[in-house]
Image (cartoon, rainbow, N blue to C red; front, top):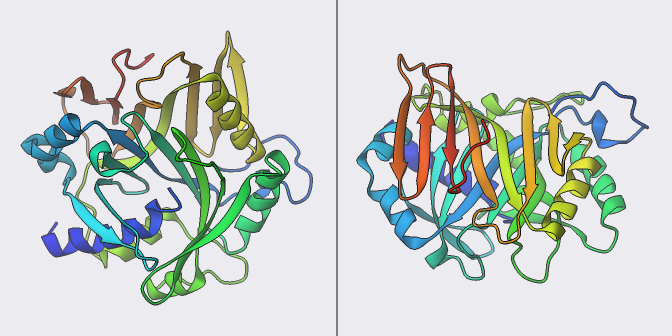
Length: 306
């Protein structure tokens, strides 16, 4: 993809990264977020130590495979961040250098979900507020001229090691992208990213993020569980290991005494097929691309359970 195309995508990414699914079979009361069929994973972010971040930035293979590039952007509020986006067909990974993130340490992570039908965030806000009545906030992030999106999250006094939020794009932002949901309809993640590429075909290898494995402290696990259950995720628990599923996304969590990385493993589907399995080590992380059409990025030394 031409550099100008990558820059256009990076501008759009910063409209998503800041603050910081499908219907279930079981019955849900009116207004429950289980009815919010448009809820999907938008992106995740990970904070790496400076040496690992630099190794990724300098890796020719990572650059060739994922088109990684470092970019600094500013919001309409005057805030700025520097990161490397790994852009996929439906979702993306945002990679931060801890050296440039005040209050955020290596191993911090976040899960950002989004709704794709206008007005669905109101249902999400009601559900999250019920679970966290004293700490739920809703804010608007603006661009230089128009609002980008609203988001709902649990507020903390300082940056949380594991952060989560749900976002909804503004009508003005969608219309600028040529997206016009009408009559209560929704739009797809593919349509949104197609609008960002301005008709250019997707040439990367990341299709979608389909699974996450988390390592959390006891209090982080409690908050994560309450947040996801409030959003209508189905839950399974086996020997203290929790699994939550919704809309093709599986999130597994284990309690750790001292987590090195809150997001330990990112699982993804591939947009391109590979005739043989391929692996790549960067620092103490390992990337695997499988001939079965799926890949993993293991960010913790203990790696993947599968």
